[in-house]
Image 1 (cartoon, each protein chain N blue to C red):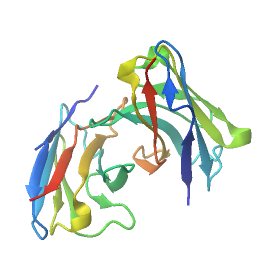
Image 2: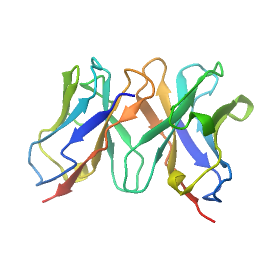
Image 3: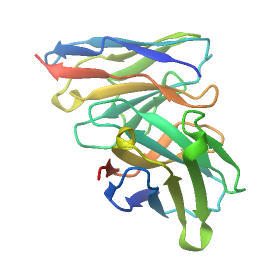
Image 4: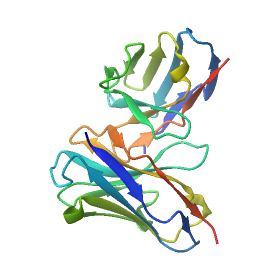
Length: 120
Length: 107
């Protein structure tokens, strides 16, 4: 059973970089079985796909965030990470790391989510 | 980007009711449509993929239908654990997009 767990600071100052890590268990991040994505959800609002990475290192980003987003993989730790630069209050949200089976692109499994607040 | 529009945004229903809600895509997405359930304070959970295929472990009271631009999710007999928010998602073209959700509340 594949499980994901997000970790990282819960509070980030405006204009700084948000950094989160997702630790994958139950599967090798290098297996090629999954795409690894980040999705966020502001309080009381809907879901926004941020981007994804595949084992090859290939990435796809939401154009709305592309200029500020970097997703990377650390295979030695079975982790993937999100960096979102120049954050504002609008980036305050619960951030989920999510797997999607290659080549299907539906989202399962999900991490439990981590709240990141952007505030000075 | 493909816009996904769900209706209604919320509905009130009773245990045992049959409920149906809809998801409309801004362009044809064939059968590349998935549904998720999100209970309060929890991560979303995949319910249905490819319009009508139930994810393993999902009760058979859930069903999905549609094609092209119009899709529906039906719960045949609402149970207490079904009071939640439901989101549709298209996996036809990047960027993947979600509907704004339908919240099912207790009447």
